[in-house]
Length: 120
Image 1: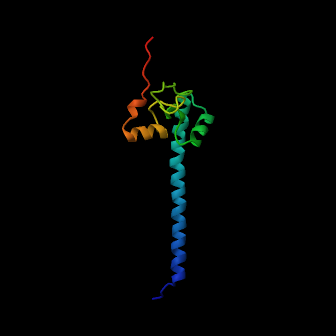
Image 2 (image 1 turned 90 degrees about the vertical axis):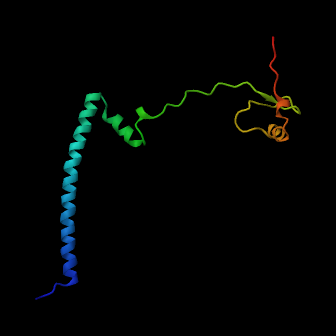
Image 3 (image 1 turned 30 degrees about the horizontal axis):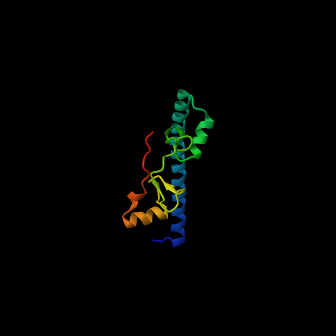
């Protein structure tokens, strides 16, 4: 019996691999065609344009499902603390504390800097 060489075996395997890749491409094309047809039908049914679909494909998520950011800036909050050493420096008590507030807090005297509400 004649033995086939390694090169012949490799050539045979490469040919089989190529044939399988061609079949895979054909199956994917057929499957993708069905999916695309469904997408087109859904777009037509819902009045979605090709431009909207293209724009949605550019981003990670469709615009309709993204959380909307609040428009404009947040409302200003009245200051809660005033620097005893400099009356122009205030802090709302939110966010990172300024150095003077941190020093008062570390000393346990932050309440001494509370702004007293004025009654009119």
